[in-house]
Image (tube, rainbow, N blue to C red; front, side, top):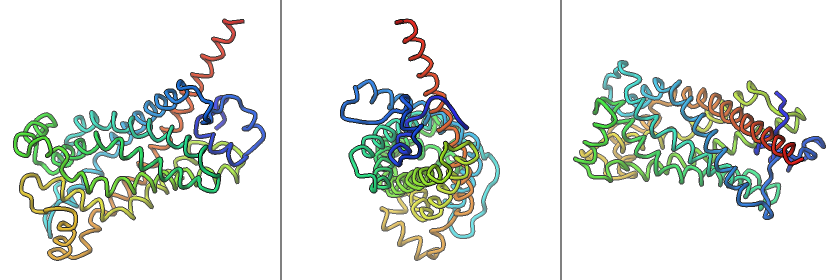
Length: 317
């Protein structure tokens, strides 16, 4: 897939001298200390739009698999898994997913570009790791309440998102919407950092080998691999987060370490890997969809910007 306007991710490729054509392309946005504030705002805006689009598409398509995964992790012992209402809570969840995904990519893109410019080329992986963690931390303000409401609805505790928010606040206070916040960060900061690092590094290596831009199937393949590997590695953290978020006011678990010890003592350490199959499937497929939509949206925005700049230039002449 070849486009006339390069996306901001091409700045990574430039740093590795993919081709002289890329070096000469004036539409590639690179972060430098001489950049105007407008460029930062553009990175923020385009990243937010692309992230929102990718997040909504993935959440809608794969929500049933996520529901099954949540129910597998939430049930104790040999409890039965209910396979009805697999889209329970989707509408309310999308209300949170859209801004959360927008914040994540909106922060990730400028942070990545700044770090790539500031650090030596050999530390590009560190730049991607750090940018992923920063984006995850920024979006957690929205992602945690969204996740709490979603998982309570997926386990049948509430019938609608508005009821869930109202009753959670009534019974547990506002902090109830941030139940399991520490475990969420424990899971998602490493997850975001590792997934985006793997994805970005594989894209750089692939571009070096192919000496061209990646097409949609190639982005999908790399995204799926990065998502599946990261999803498998972080499954125990996901189980802990799920248990803490769905327990409500029962306070069965007093914290992260108490949750781990209780699960290991009462159910065995294998319980920490509950739902790994659906999680890897969900995140693997989700990674392929997310990164394809993300890259495609960024390309469309870059093309639109290039056309507008060309139109403005012709008018000035």
